[in-house]
Image 1 (cartoon, helix red, strand yellow):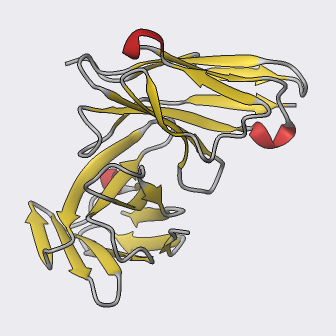
Image 2 (image 1 turned 180 degrees about the vertical axis):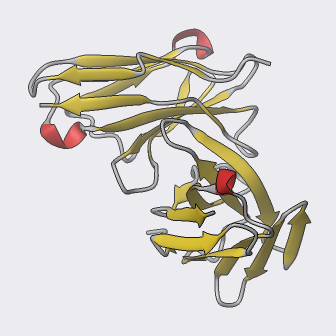
Length: 113
Length: 112
């Protein structure tokens, strides 16, 4: 079974630029999560989708972050414009339903200069 | 809000047992998880325990849960150099109304 795929693996941008990350969850998984992991901290949830609907986006900085999951499969997370404090690893995870084990992708490491 | 806390660092010798501790604040947590993260990799689920259990054993891993004190521990028997990684404790609920809340991670260093 293929795991959660993410791209790119690394991205370096300057502040005020825009960036987008892509995630392809495990086939058949209804729930998809985006987490932000700042160096030295645990992952923090940004947004949770159930199929193509948003379950929780309470911690998503909506003035600059947006995410979508068209057709309930792939998802993209966008930051526009980026700030220095957005430097982190962005992890995508999926699970078969709303509960149960979450399977994580390798993450995208973003550096904002 | 919910909070999960862990000690930052643990160093052990190869062959010894490692014990990583975690405390959480949300008494309604239903599941408690241990994840492992190796450098440059995503998180890998090691094991989990339901909140109505006191202990779970899975090969070299033993999870102990003290629900009264909201304290969780992960014991790794016969620790190997390949166990060197960051270990995250996380809590979740069975309704899926909120995603996992992670601790800040414990870096385990295994010395030969």
